[in-house]
Length: 268
Image (tube, rainbow, N blue to C red; front, side):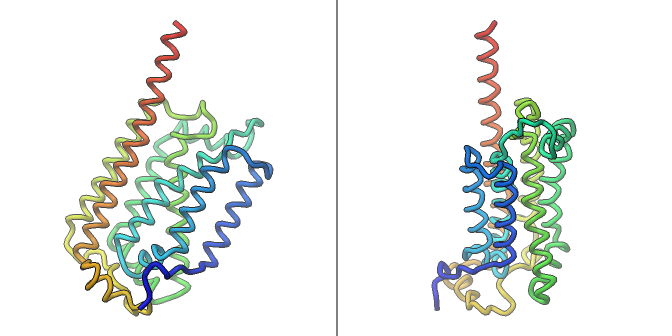
């Protein structure tokens, strides 16, 4: 039996999507390379891990916990990195500028997008239906997977936009941003708690129905992961790492707030 680490796969749909994303970012930056390239490359690397590595196989066919890892990475890491990699457009008259202004005035839109999409994809009925679709129909499985991935990345971008907007004047004040992140942390923590302590089997994404990669026995016998454990790990991933990311972002905002106060006090 091959090692799980050898199960890298080429995903045509993800590859086309990533190439298109690279084109959009290059066009936005007039095909020049600047500071924006670093966070963008990190985001691309994480996309490759999520869609081409063994993590993709585990998340799509075997483990709810692996599926949760992908969701967290797309929403709370890739999304913000894509916003950070947008340099401010000096023309002041484009979609980025208009969207930055709109999300600054109505930050609840980004908040609802970020927290709401995570809750939506983990409603048991929705989650189980998508998993069944992926196993019973290749076309339906592709469509639901593509929709799920795109919605998570888009929601992550919208959620983080008012915090790390490419237009500085459209970023939330530091303390407002902390409250924004704190309430989102509560929302994801509640979801994590519900998943962790829900009855085992409520989410049916555990082990492949076909097991064409012969990993069912590895997961159960070698890794000692059963259905209850898998669901609990998924809930803890939603609960602990998510909150840790929110706390890190909040500490960054607090640091920015103290720096701004120091600058004001020195001027006075």
